Length: 205
Image (cartoon, rainbow, N blue to C red; front, side):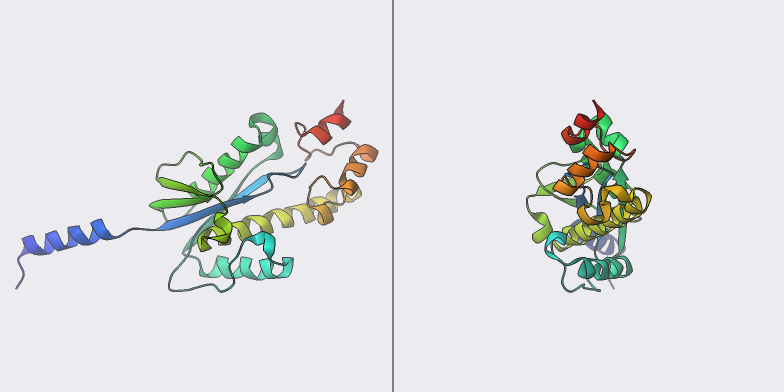
């Protein structure tokens, strides 16, 4: 029979070698002229793999919607957060993006030991984190986060379109397309436009 001392040592070694949970983090909505920047954090379940995870930008809208539901159903946990258009104007888009990412990680039901973030900048976190350029095409958990963030923001744009149909948010998703810029010139800015972004600032003068 093993001694209690040996069992304790074996358990300690096991916990030391266990890497813990890894979360992937990504955002959507840095470039648009209106609305929040949305971030998501996802801890995937290795026992429940999800086929077809990829950078949200290379997927069709229909496929993103399907994967959104599958990720929500199969991930160990996930969290979606945002920084508002007002916060974007107050602290700038980079800081607002990092704030949304931090909120997403802090909203996870389970605490990860490692956070992998798409891009080259990291939010302030209480656990170890790594930035991975093009991580949304390299790391499945980041791909999943990119899909959650993109679908959430696209749904928000559809809701905004219902409130302000003259801008066409359902189509351009807030980006500075010719249609959107023409609508800004014709109608001015709505309350959800980012006032510090140049095309919006021009019509506010």
